[in-house]
Length: 141
Image (cartoon, rainbow, N blue to C red; front, side):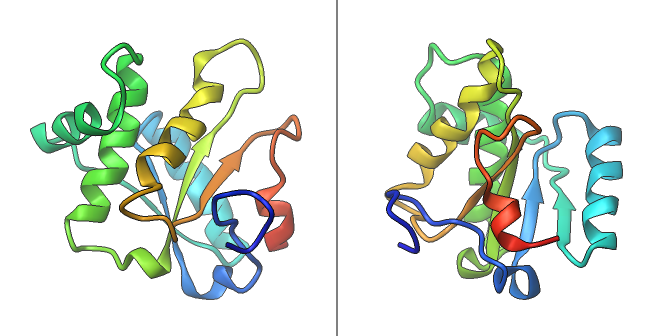
């Protein structure tokens, strides 16, 4: 790994080589957000899959007591990685974190746990405005 944590971080070099996948949480908002990232040289894609496989992957990778939106986000990422459409060595995943009491702040930890055995090389980028993680700051904008 590239840091003292047990998961990979998104580096400045990855900006040139990696596609950043974004879940369909708030489709219009996230499409606008990815357009801003692309303006700064990042390659982003909002995932569009809404198939039953998304739910199945979420159920396989997240505890069944986890909220349904988390299950769908993680399922969407896992379905995309398993589909063969993306090279796991050239992809990163982006999730927002609110930093407050909202359960959405925990999605990122659930996603990293889901990736740990099958895709340990895939970095997860925390999109937050309260300094929870500074993964994009290390990448330089």
